[in-house]
Length: 312
Image (cartoon, rainbow, N blue to C red):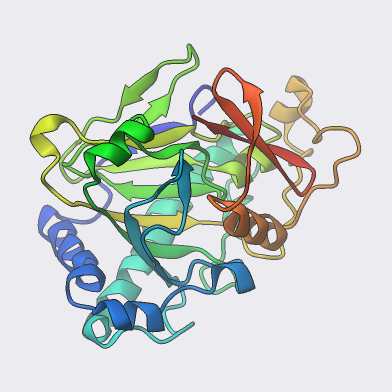
């Protein structure tokens, strides 16, 4: 967590059969919903700063005019937040239970361990992540589609640039089709190995801000799969967790660990953002604005006075 903000979890409470069931459900928004209906349930990203609903293909700019080839369908942990496509409705009770399981049986134990690591009461971070609170913690079903050789060449085989997630903890159900890589401290990209029925855990910006940088947000990217896997769609199941909308993302200065490390604040003059302000602006700008080159393949933008880096 100090170096990469990244680890894997096994024995998380779902059997291989339950995990396979969720992956089957995850494909429904992509294989059983018409293109016309996808537009009906499209997320109002710019208007609301929310991904709830469909993020359709070609919304994000990747590089050299190349647009993304990934769709995702996002369901708030409050599954009644908005209406869902007809094909998905029979599965909403299972998705609701899946969200509860991720939140209470996986996320909360991880947050307790992280609080202990800061020498804080173990419910400190749990209190910021209430399952019933207003926020954008959600289940995400995500599918990458193969791209043309021309687009692969223009984008140097990068499907999503190196970035950090903007929430606190991302839970990814391990995928057999490779593509995910993390950036190590020595500047090299390393493949994330598939572990059957395991979870890949990424720390995000919100956790880095709350811990004053003590816990690092994972820098990760998605690239073209290896040659023997390129004919497959890459289906993903995620639980993106964020602190409640009203939480201020300021360092937990009461932590003895942060006091000893001197990690007590953001840059001078920067006011800590609320979670709602942070996630809305990060959502609206991602893949939509011109980034500023900062050298060595790093590009930057400013969100709520904080420098956000992208790794190209």
